[in-house]
Length: 119
Image (cartoon, rainbow, N blue to C red; front, side, top):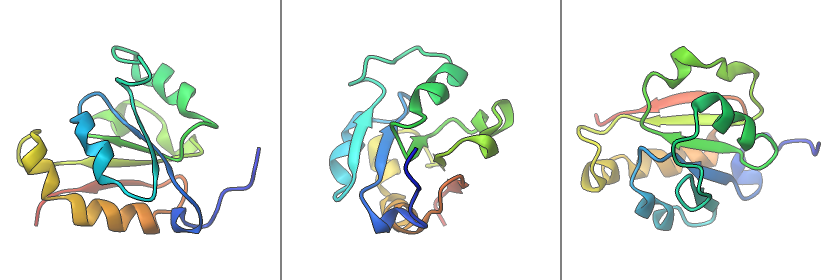
């Protein structure tokens, strides 16, 4: 397995957008290789299996599933997780978090779990 960069900004991050987020978000992440659970036809996949499928294929999971870190042992995974906590799970509300999200993608070390919420 290739050695991971210290930060994703050292290379293009391979990002997976979970099915609980609007897949149009993918177009708003320039400079990253973005796929969606929907485009991969992984919708309805249980979390553990989804996380297993990500290994070696993705660097970051974007999700709005706030219980994911409580239900799964994410610290042992070779990718990072960004949990978006918008006011409502609609694209305009998610867009409020876009500056924080882009900054996190450029500075997030592998294996981190972070939550982003409006100020």
